[in-house]
Structures are given as C-alpha cells and as structure tokens.
Image (cartoon, rainbow, N blue to C red; front, side, top):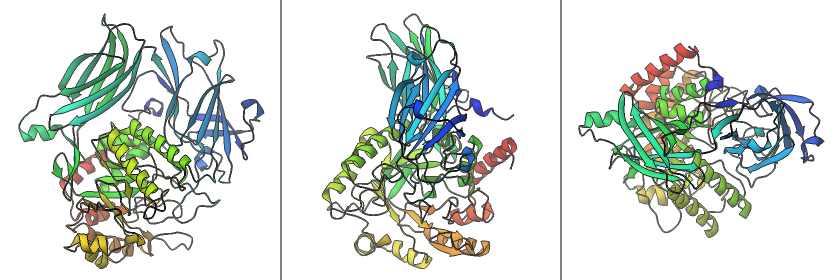
Length: 607
C-alpha cells in the first residue's frame, strides 16, 4: 500500500507524531530589486507550489531571470494547543536570507541557504481565524561571497554551473510539542567498546527532576532499556551493549552497504512521577570509520570505495526532489550501477535522502557548497553554515566523510596565501572537533593542506596514462613531486603526508551526446562507444593498488553537463547491469541484496 506523502516525516531521525506539512500552493511575488521590506508593500498576483524554487518548472513559475528577492504568503489553521504545548514552525531550507512574519509580527530572520531553522510561533498566534504566514527570501544572484554551490552567477547556465535556486526549496512544516521536551538528539557509536553514544539536550525549566528513558531495539532483539537523570538540561551517555562475542553475531549487528542494519530508538522524557512529557522515535547504527596507512576502513576492515559524483538536481524541480520515491530511487540506482557510495557534490542533501542511504546502505561524502570569493564575510558565512550542516547530519550512519572545500573554490590562492591555508586547516580541525568519528577531506581535488584522505581530480581521458600515473611504485617522488592533475600541486606545505589513502575523487566525465550545446570532459556519440569507454577506463582504475577507491563523474546528466551514466530523468544510457559489471568487475553478493531492494521498490512504486 502506498504511503501518504503527507505522513513522511521531514526529520527521520527525530520523529514525533504531531506534525503537519505546509507544502502546497502559496501566494507569491517576485521583487526583482529587493525594494519591498515589509509585507504590506507586496501585491500578491501569482501562486507558487512550495517547496519548489521559482526557477523550476515544478513550481509553476519557471522564471530563471535575475531577481534579488521573492515573497510568499500562506494561511493555515492552528492546531488547538493546551497550556503545556507550543507550536513550532520549521523551514528545512530557504535560500538565502529569510525573514518571517506571522500575523504581521516579525518572528525570525535566518541566513544560510542549505540549513534548517525552527521558530516557536506560539505567542504570535491569533486566537481566532486563520493564521497568516509571510516569508521574504533575499538572494542576490551576483553575491559570490556566500555559499552557493553550483548556482550560476551568469544569467544562463554555463560550463559546470546550473540555474539558481531562490527562496523556499525544501519542506515547510508545523510541529506541536510540549513545553518541556527533548530539544535534540545526537547518536554515535564505538566498536572497540561496543557502545552507542547518546547526547540529548532537554528544553525545560531548571526546577523538577526529569528522567530520559532510552530504548534500543534491532528487529525483535532488545539491546537497551535504560533510564538516565537529566542534569542541567543535558544527558550524555555511552550505552554499553552486550557483546555477542562470535563474529557472525557481531557482524550481523554492524551497518555496512551490504548489510545496512539499523537500530531503532524510542526516547521518552518523563517527570519524577513517571508521567510522559515527550517522546521521540529515532534510529542509529553500529559502525566505525577510519583510515589506516593507505586504506579506508569500515568497521575495522579495508573497504575499496566505489563512488559516483552526484549533483542532486532533477530536470523539472532543480535541487528539490520531485518526490520521496525519487530519493529512494536515486539511492537504489547508485547501488544498481555497482557503487557503494556517493559524493554529494556542492549540495547539502535533504535529510530524507540521508534516511534512504542509511536504510538501503549507501556511503555518503557530504560536501559544503562553496563560496567563490575569499573575504572576512565569506569566512564567517561558510563557517557558520558548515557548523549547522554537521549539527544536522552527524547522526546519520551513511555519512563517512566531511568535505568543507572543493578544488580550492573560495580559497583561490592557497599556494601563495598563508591566510587561506590557515582557513582550510582551521575548518579541517573544527570539523574534527565537532565530529571526531569521521574522516575529513580539507580541500578535495588538489592543493591539500590538511586531510585524512588525498582526493585527486584527474580527467585524463586515456586509460593507459591513468594507469601509468597511479600504478607506479614510487608514489611520493613521481605522483606528488612531478604530476600536476588539473595543473595543480596535489600537496602544499612542509607536512607532505602522502601516506594517507589516495582516492581518485573525480575522473571520467564521459558525455554521450550529439548536441553542440552540451558539455563533458570527453564525448561519445553512441551508447556502444559510451559503454566501451567507461568499461576500459574502469578496468584500469578499479585495479590500481595505489588507490583506496574512486569516484566517477557522474551519476546523471545535469542540465548542459551531459556526462552522466544516466540521463537527467534517471533513465539509463546503457543497461544498468552492463555499467555495474564495468564498475565492479563482477556482480558480487551485494548486488543480490540490491536487486532485492530494487524489486521491492518497483513493486511499491512501479517502473
């Protein structure tokens, strides 16, 4: 039976039952020069389908011209609240600077186009009639000092940059909560001690004793049923699990792409009399990420990374997925193509994508969308938003690496500028401080100054040259001293930590196209030629002992960039099994698991 889309929770790891989506038709207005500052200055002459941005066809607007601000209005009925309840208004993402009014009163301002924010609107509610919500989103299309990812600053998309995304582009929703409630949950795991880490923040007055009840379950097996006293509004615990001892039982509980075992969690907040005040359902997983010498390790064992670059755009809806089924399909398609991971490129993907990656077993490298100027303002903006990204997503087991910079974008003078090198190093160490459980690639592509993995971008279209470059014995002297993929040095500074794992994090980019206005790093005109070139290149790359893995460019065609393994609508350019065979060299057991998931997906949603 199909699931009602209105019941799909926007935050799969922090679910309460009392929520309502506000997606749908809103009043709308484009303010080209951002002249209006308050709602009464706006004439509501158009309608838009939220959460699609006005640049997209799915929004019903489809306006890709330059404009600096947009306005939204919607009326909604407030749920009936008891004296001990509050109403929260959530925005999953609004690009770039949002101002929110409710019933004429300004209730919030937020800056940052890729991160969520929440507003307690209880005190601004009217006691009678509908509530009027107005949103102003200011987004200067020429501002290169803000994190903008692949959003083009030119009028028409060019090269590897795509149409802009203005305003609301992820879900808007309401949530009824208790005044005394669980504010946030963060999960982690430690395999050495066979523990699940829990960090909870409680929103509550200082008086009164509160207890947090935590239940962990894997299938029918109860792993923990614990109670902890809330101290100073916080709970920080390491939940020891019973170690099964035998490897077969231990491995069955571990999360991996071939066996994505999740641990369901129910977290309840109770007063000292045992009365239930709040309850949240969530999930976590047991798994570890590390690097040892030149290898990437998952759960203490070497894993060869087979990743694909994923821009996360759809033809009609831009950065916003057209449906939850589309997110599930993207995860399954990546696995069906033979990959065990994706590098989400210049986009912070919505939490429901990460949920499907958690559930179906797909590794994710999460990358911060770049700013393109190096200024004090750009440093402040990107750092603040990057911290919010990590805060939102660090509990997802699928995420195995953080990438704050790509190809020196926003730090264009790294070889000559100590200040810019310090900036990259600072974000590397800040990321490690916020999340010491994952790997961090400080600047992916080249000019590395602080990293756990050396990521290299190399679009040489000749497999034999790729094989010679990365198949040599003396890596330090030849690759890091003499080679310049992309025309850049691979390592900077005195600490030439070349013994880190090496991953070819961008290569390939073979386009299948006969159109003159499309783009790729190399071009083919027939599906057979495309398949043969991909197979020849992968036959070399996947067998290079110097590499800990690879990331092929790219998953799907994206606007004018036609170098995807799939067309933009996700139809395959050649049979999926043929690509998977070239990607892996065989059809391993993992593909049996993936095929089962794919059949289930088709049964539920059709082809």
